[in-house]
Image 1: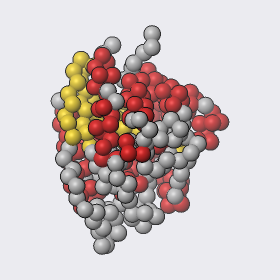
Image 2: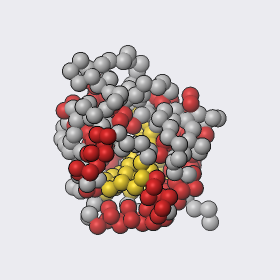
Image 3: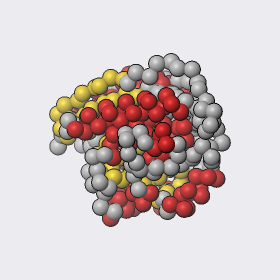
Length: 301
């Protein structure tokens, strides 16, 4: 059965980290055929184009030492408006990144429509740093903390409210690189995390079954999927800015997306950190599009 409407929103932002090229992620994903791949799965697809980011110079906030703080707050505010408008129009918002700091805006636009939003964070990293715990000052390592209401007020207040999600409504899948501050926050807040150890030990089927059950038991009225391509092993997704070996396989990722499609719990999604400059013949963007197909119910037979 076809879904009704899909809104594709490009967010070509690279302000949350220091490696150039991830701003071309939305273009790479479109070039890999996202519209063609998904057209049979929706009654309507509206490609909203890209939010204008420009080519600003790197700015470091003198008080917090955060890079591009004001600009990221400004641009994610715009993304939040676009996502909000898509949901208001009865459309499923699919955001194409861009670095993972864009999730600050996506979640700000999504969460206002749900009273008990769940989040699946499919990523090698926890993205739970703050200005105090971040080794780099790069905001792409902070969006999940920001969405919990932890961090600089310019970021936590994007959308005009906060927090966007409760810690008990988050499931991180694929973690294998966590900073000390992130580990402490995970323990303090009781955030559910499936590291690569759990995925190897339990298998992806069990991990996804448990994750889906966990979110349903918390009576979530919507679930946002935030998928960072570096959650996959660099062999399958080489075009990412912060690759970490020993990741989730291509096949395991398809299984995860297929199980989410069968569970029918995902109400919004973003695919981030595709960097075609670091890629091999647009392989990572092609993987992203294939996973989108599985997430939205594409079947072989």
